[in-house]
Image (cartoon, rainbow, N blue to C red; front, side, top):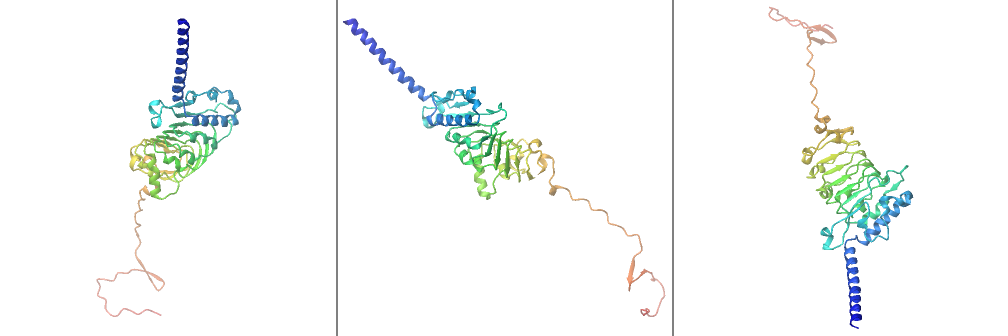
Length: 325
């Protein structure tokens, strides 16, 4: 009897400890996984990618992106924060990096990717780094969506086919340190035509920006002088555009890396930084010396040219003869 009670006690204890550790495991596993809405956003993104490129269904990069996986922090191309940096002192981890760089690069021909496919990203507001270069994305940059990603530090959208103008929302991101938009088909001005006060307010959001690459686009107009107020800006590349006008030389423009190659192939740009003087800086031409007339002076008297005759120092008298009729 005592042995039976002992066995029952052991079994009960084992059962208790099993469920205790099981629930403890679920608790800690759940605390280390990404939020459900971020997982669903990534799955929606995968569905959009497979809709235009079914051959990626068995791709190694997206193979780990499955519904049955409890933790999207373990998926390829995704990185999450540590629990030490979780928002609002929570114990959950959030997605901070997504790298789709050249995901479709090996496909030939590359499928057309519409910029509307970016929509799921805008539900992952914890993103700090987003790399979507070289995936043949086309259309206008959805500025309203990017205004949600206020934690972005690095944004790389280079090597695509984005068109239209640069949305002003990109200049509102307060923590952005690098913005790469090179190798697209962007046009228009680097900034919209706004009042000076609005420009000042808008650029205040870029105080952490150190790298701005706008090269190989179709941007026109001039380089805005407001960029000189960005205290952290060290590299500005606007080469291979259609920019014109004088390059500002105040503020950071006087201390950043001013490699002439960063301004090359803009037929209208000028200033000392790229060794192309502006027209107003050209020295005025030296006027030619005045012509000296070596002929004797002549006077026109009633349509008849006569030479000047000197009659001084004589003893002439009488009246000056009248004009002959």
